[in-house]
Amino acid sequence: MKKSNSRNYVLVHGAWHGGWVWRQVADALRAMGHTVTTPTLTGLGERKHLASQRPDLLMHVEDVVANIYLEGLSNIVLVGWSYGGMVISGVLEQIQEDVASMVYLDAFVPKRGQAVIDCVESAAASAFQGFIDAEKDISPIIPLEVFGVEDAAICEFVNPRLVPQPFKTFAQPSEALLELPSGIPHTYIRCSGFPEPSLDAYLASAERDPNFDAHVMSTSHLAMLTDPQGLVEILDNAS
Image 1 (tube, rainbow, N blue to C red):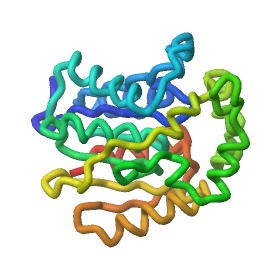
Image 2: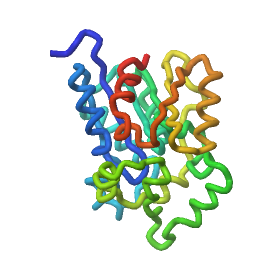
Image 3: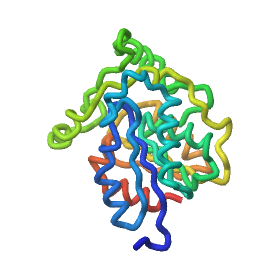
């Protein structure tokens, strides 16, 4: 039986990963009486066989919108992790009437017209450009150690499940709203175990913005695996 304050969570993963990355967090939220969906974006996870469709950011936005529509969800807590922040910003633009709260987990919060390569520092953007396989239009997998993951068991679980990210998802501009709607509360969660200046800037901006509730977790970029309980507590209390 659902508790009276149960909510509908849509958890959107980041680059190279899939909906599988949320399994511990999803199980915990469901045990608390919430509804949870964890859509996997086209070309990733168990949908890696669709990479030939050359997915882009807009396709990933449509993946999540379709998931919400087919599940019949409203009053949604929309959570985007890392690249997933790009996706949920586009989802909000399409279905803001169904969104109750936005949560950015160590994520990009794009302005309209910005792509991932616009949201990172110029040096990082150049690295992105040099890192891709131009012929296949993909970004090879970045080692988990870069993201602050040191637990060997987590690396053993995650690494075989990672797949290259379609580069168009990093290069296509966001169609995010021109202004954040004041009636929808936002949360920004920064994971301090992953040193990334662009994400520090989002945290600083969130701390100045009355529409945002800001948190810092002392864990890796993959907080859903390295501190799932801490993350669940924040998500359960998200406005």
